[in-house]
Length: 385
Ligand SMILES: NC(=O)c1ccc[n+]([C@@H]2O[C@H](COP(=O)([O-])OP(=O)(O)OC[C@H]3O[C@@H](n4cnc5c(N)ncnc54)[C@H](O)[C@@H]3O)[C@@H](O)[C@H]2O)c1
Image 1 (tube, protein in one colour):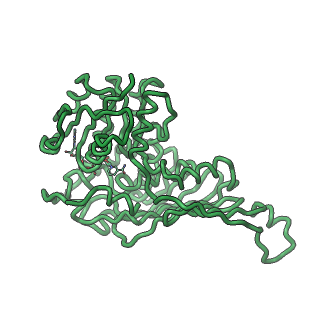
Image 2 (image 1 turned 135 degrees about the vertical axis):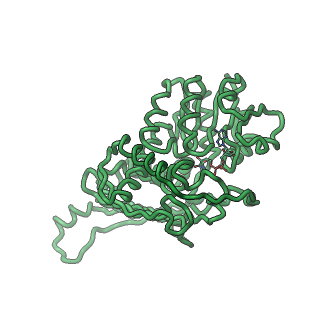
Image 3 (image 1 turned 120 degrees about the vertical axis):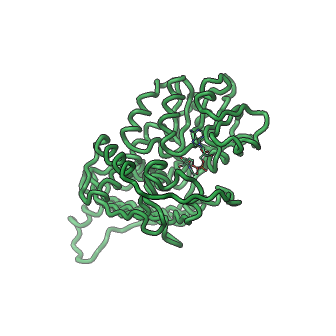
């Protein structure tokens, strides 16, 4: 194979964006050969590609080697399993599934190395986060002491929530800010700092919007070595903050305003404390600043990496199996907030799934939707994140 024939399933806001840059030639050696949406009008603007209203037909059509799934979240699992079982390469939007048990079902359908299975964690392509990853992997920070991620710059309007019947409902989306906006930051958190051992959180359902799912979360994390963490998010705060601070024995990383600041202790803090003969002394330090592009990341780079992995065995930047961790973190935060009790990681996926089904069964929420379509470009939503 010298070119990948790609099909995109779900041609809404994000799927439409993926289609645009692929058709503009931004992904070398990749042709968009098919699109699929349950709303046929969304496919009207496409010419020279096969069109399907049923993903099962696209998957079995023989006109694609790979699919990019950009449907509402529950479809990631069902459509993903179908495509993997039919032997296609799969790139799935975040979150890879709604809950941990579904992630396990999806990952179990992956047939192994020859089949490429990736997730759209585009923020991993951002040079700032890649630099942070490199510094942490080289142990420049030493042992983790504390982490703090405030990501309240995901402001969303009532119009946004009304723009899709599936949005912000237990049955259509499966959650709120933890599942829609934050998979990126939850992925960065686990990618850079590993998984905590315990989560205790406070959540508010529909605090700032007329929705039934969570739009405000404050979670306290305890890591296996005793280090502590705080994760704060909201879609109702403006102007909002995006500040990620990771403190270790040997210094501190601060990512804010598209810049990474690295402050390095010349002597680890605990060692300085032990050997110093000063009462108020501090370890000597030096500072470095890495200017970045933005706090976002490039979708087309993940898609190019996916294509290169199929054609040249290039290692994946975001293997889909990694996606279970951000889902597990979000599920644990939600469950802790709902029950008022701490939740251990690994999370019991069956317990969470049961709870989610109960929320769906007992929901009395009447969702209001609008058929008005916004003229905004979806890319406007990325810059603030
Ligand atoms: N990576 C990112 O930066 C990013 C940004 C925004 C959205 N997303 C993700 O993209 C996905 C879609 O979000 P969106 O904002 O584009 O939603 P959207 O509602 O605009 O688009 C979803 C599309 O899927 C179609 N659809 C629904 N069920 C389908 C099915 N069974 N088969 C085929 N098509 C179906 C809908 O008709 C709609 O056109 C979500 O998983 C979301 O989390 C990712």
